[in-house]
Image (cartoon, rainbow, N blue to C red; front, side, top):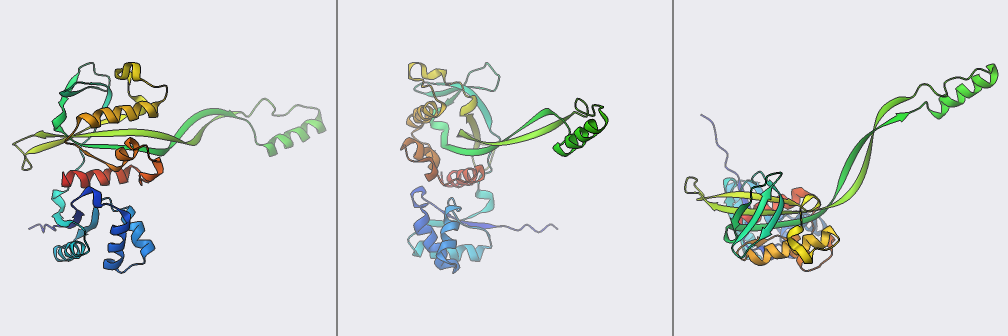
Length: 275
């Protein structure tokens, strides 16, 4: 018989309590680690105070967190929603009742009622871009000097136009990308949770902002901020992640706190769990 190991997590119940100061102070005292380490842990917590714990350990930590003024509780691993495969949105327009959009190269316009949108997760990240080019590469400087010496000694041209070969050269650059994940919660009586979570993914670099019409700006960042505000204003029941709130408040992008998309996904799992 297979043994099922159930893991437990301690999470915060309220989004506004995910502040590095109070969380870091609690973790430092509870785990008995230096404050500098606990503050680093708090910045990477994204709503999770403890992960993959035994039940007794999780209950003890949650009790201590509550005593420290944090609204926390214990959940089992299966209660953390898995992130669905995202669907790439290429264009959209907004009505009073629906988010209307097209996916990929499709021409079909789909509709999503605003009250079915449960989470808006936006982020701006610097990411490495690798570009591979095929170039012609001649002999090395040392080889050319040898050939020149032979030519000067013998009067016979050696290897100046030969020995070229094609090689693949990879260049690495850093570019700034903007993304928005629109998480939806559709009623589904056939699953235990009673609903199915979906994800509509918008990559600002490939999105058609023509719906903005006269409001359209000459830069992607400005258009993206208009888009997330339009969607946020209509998705009144949706939770907004830290990245979206930072952008809407015109705060510096480095205050988002994300180091990679892994942080964004972790925060999304937590927000979906408490939504």
